[in-house]
Amino acid sequence: MSAPIPEIKKDDLVALVKSLFQEGRIDHFLGYQKGTVKFKTAPLIAHKEEDLQGLAVDDFFHSNLALYLKEIKGRVGILTKGCDSRSLVTLIKEEQVKREDLYIVGIPCPGQIDPKRVAAAATCAIEELEEINRRGQEMVIRVNGQEKTLPKIQALMGKCLACHYPQPLIFDALLAGDYVAPVSPITRSPDDLRPKPIAEKWAFWSGQFERCIRCYACRNVCPACFCPRCLVEENMPQWVSPLPSQGDNFVFHLMRLMHVAGTCVSCGECERVCPMEIPLMKLNEKMADDIKELFDFVAGVDLDKALPLRTYRQEDPDDFIK
Image (cartoon, rainbow, N blue to C red; front, side, top):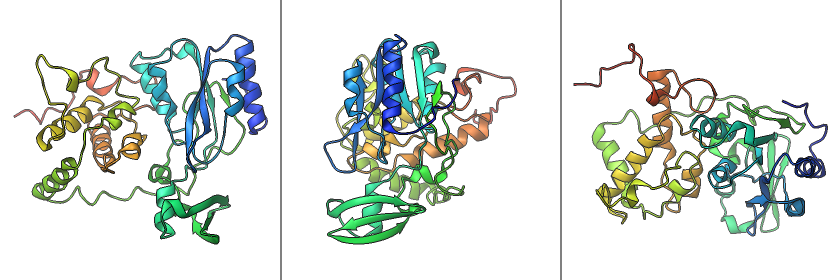
């Protein structure tokens, strides 16, 4: 690991990446650029120094850039938040990428701002938001020309409120800055669905999956989904229809959930991009808690620890066998 870079300014990041290109250490660089929509960024895939002009560092780099490592071949530099570094660990463990082909630049993350939560807290439509700025522990927003102040806790993405990994778990360079959790450590609010009777849970998820239009955005944005051919595309045998129907929607989502057990790092991208706003993180977090309880395993935090569903130990619990 190299020494931290002395400044966090954008120009210093660009200078670092340019030197990586010039020294032949990378063939591509993954970062963020301003989006075409307010309060959004888009992935930037730079193939040469000139492509770095749009490189941006701001409060809205939501995307988990590890997703694009599945498609980009060669030596890749990548800008990584602490939470997203867990996906890098998992992809390396799954032999989807090689550690020696990566140059990982860690970036301080003060917590990602969620415009939807800001708009809800300000009781306005997202389109009415004109500005969102940080001021210490508060967010100063402008709505229809009027300034309002919100506590930071009302403006950040849900996953940021329970951040356990403010610093990347693996890196080659760190941009200077504060690698601390964006808010004081808090216990994740318990899922009020879990203690309810099975009939209520079934009714809840039946209603959620009935709304699913099977656009596959959740699958396509997931770094842990890297099968060359998805089960929904198999036709001999056809395990599940690719068309939306309540029964097959159940099968698709639950099979995908089990498929990424032990490799899903709860990055929240599936829920963030879902056009129907299905609360998929309820499933992901329940699975993660079960994996932790059964196997003492947390996805993406230990490069050397064996994946739980790839190994067998004599002392593994078997009370599920009837």
